[in-house]
Image 1: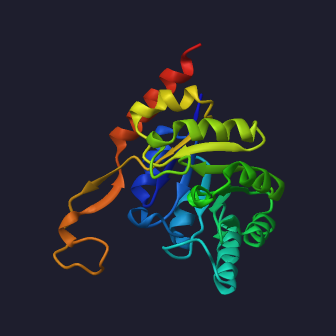
Image 2 (image 1 turned 180 degrees about the vertical axis):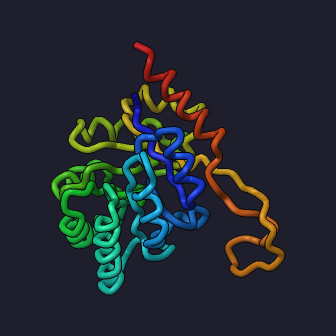
Length: 244
């Protein structure tokens, strides 16, 4: 079977992930903004849920780029420690400065995470030499890389993803993410991808009549996990995984 990591941002998503038995949860907040660090309460709600899959917590202190100042790195490391202490099986981070991996950040996170797994997120897609970056991340102790292959969505970068799988050579996991849909499962598996990442979300109506932010008007509703889409993706993964 190909591993399925579901990105969730609320207790409904945690419940769906648990009931359907996904392989891993990426827990975050504000997916519409690319995701930021979830609250301690949400982390504890996830890690304490009965029969919950392994929870990997996104640690991203703000939106925007991934070039973090020293004070921001201090916050990231503290959040990593809090997530692991709260029962997280892993953390998801990324740092890029001047077109290169922020090795200082990654080193500090790997040390703070201890035995918990570290995933380098789609900040990877900003790096101009991804094959070299794979080598560096492997040496730093990163367990997996979440990537679209360097474009906005995986559908536009299947050949690039194949090259990354070859470069990784099983030393760390290349997990495909970014616009993953049911129709893309089989092409991704043919590339040798062993894990896929998706939010499988939809928008539900929102009763709010006042907009409290600038990201979206209040009438747009809110995003949450689409149970039916999760079921369809798992079915597709099972079908592909069962083929010789």
